[in-house]
Each structure stands twice: as structure tokens, then as C-alpha cells.
Length: 135
Ligand code: TYD
Image (cartoon, rainbow, N blue to C red; front, side, top):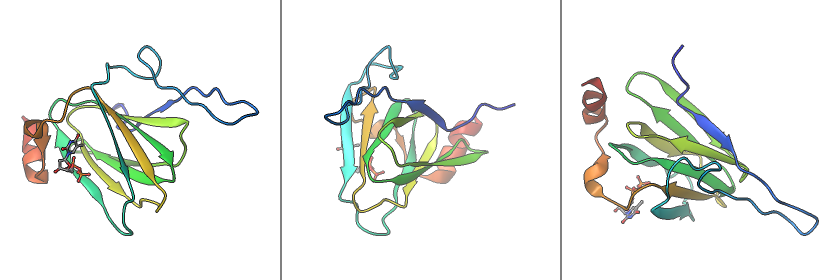
């Protein structure tokens, strides 16, 4: 059976009577060294984002507040997942077309990436992406 596109990891929690504390670290849920962190927030109603793939970049997406639906497409199959808890992370490997939908107004989506921003690593055309994964 084909491996699932959606790979959700449990983020260790160290909450106590004072409140919550969550950790992502190398050797824990992170399978790569982080070279960049960015976050998407203040997303306007009805906005959809993403609509691109990366040739090499690997990412871990954590919705630290609110909720968002992410869909992943490998050129043949599409799977989607709702991230609505800061104790779950979505690992997104290279070569996957991703879209983000249904942002809640309070959504803060934090993304840990294994490389600095590089526009040359993006594929922003879906047909080009399908050709890319086909061969
Ligand atoms: P982009 O990755 O295209 O986001 P989305 O697919 O959700 O629209 O990024 C939007 C803009 O921000 C684009 O002009 C590139 C810029 N950007 C950076 O300069 N550095 C970064 O690390 C990221 C993620 C984006």
C-alpha cells in the first residue's frame, strides 16, 4: 500500500498547572536541522494560500493557534488534514503540491523549514508540478 501523504507527528507537551509548553527539537519530532522559521497569521476571510510545491525543501507545519486545512497532492493522490491543535505537526516532504484552506481568523500557522528561502526551489504551476513528479 502507498504510504500516506499526510504525516502527522505528536508534539511533546510539558504543560502543568501554570499552562502549556510544547517543544519541537532535532532528535524529537524534527527530522531535519531548522534553517528558517516563518508563520502565517492575520489571514483574511476566504483566503487560500500555498498552491505550490518545493523541489527539495522539507517542512514541519504547526498550527499554534486557531485552525487551518492543508491539502497535499503528489501528482496522483490528494489528502487533506485539519490542523487545529498545537500538539500536532504536519511533516511535508519535498515534491508535494500544498494548498492551505479554511483559515480561522485567529490562525497562526508556524512553519519550520530545512533551508533558507529560495524562489528557485518553488514550482508554482500545477501542470509543471505534475510533469516534474512524472519524470
Ligand atoms: P509564498 O511561499 O509564496 O506563500 P504562499 O504560497 O502562502 O502565498 O510566500 C509569499 C511571499 O513571501 C513571496 O513573495 C515570497 C515571500 N517569502 C519570503 O520572502 N521568505 C520566506 O521565507 C517565505 C516563506 C516567503
